[in-house]
Image 1: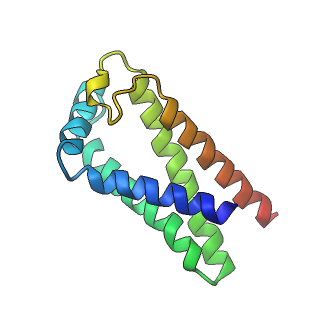
Image 2: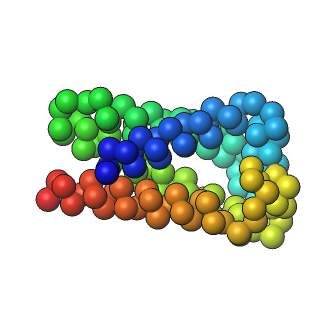
Length: 130
């Protein structure tokens, strides 16, 4: 179950990170950063963060060293929690219009769902380590 969840979360966030290089996602993401009041460097940091987190979660599935695998899933899941907290925050800001959100859904249903899945993945990882 955790392997599938890590794969799903990793692929999803990696795809969203890469899509931010291509319009209309690029324009939407830039508008989100500008209207949310986040610092300008958030644009590039968000993209890099999503790609790194996605790769950490995906690569963890192919690692044989259990310690490296543990830290890969741990870092990827924790990073995804942070990214989704920011995504929920941006969705909740009245200044950010629904038109610049990928699915045009203002309530943070998807980011909150991904946040819960990332927390669960993090919890399962830590539980296996104890």
